Image (cartoon, rainbow, N blue to C red; front, side):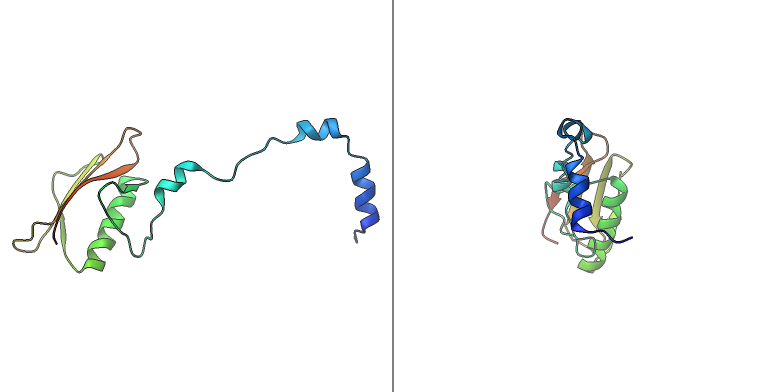
Length: 116
């Protein structure tokens, strides 16, 4: 079926503006909560105050972070709402503490003890 400008114009002429006004509700494409969750999964940057979608995703990113940083990380006292990790290197003071926030899902990095 070939459409022509004349066919389109004829269809538009039949549209009742009153019906069209109630036909669709505007829906924004931008979701403000997505602004907080931008990170590169291949090269994560983990800093104090960083937010992550879930504990599962945060743990996965921490593994990638450790591999990229060429160090071994050990977790201690961690569960579904908190994460405490430290470098396995002898005498290395680096450690990280993260917890879920009020929504019960989002993880926030609360403290990073440096240097690594």
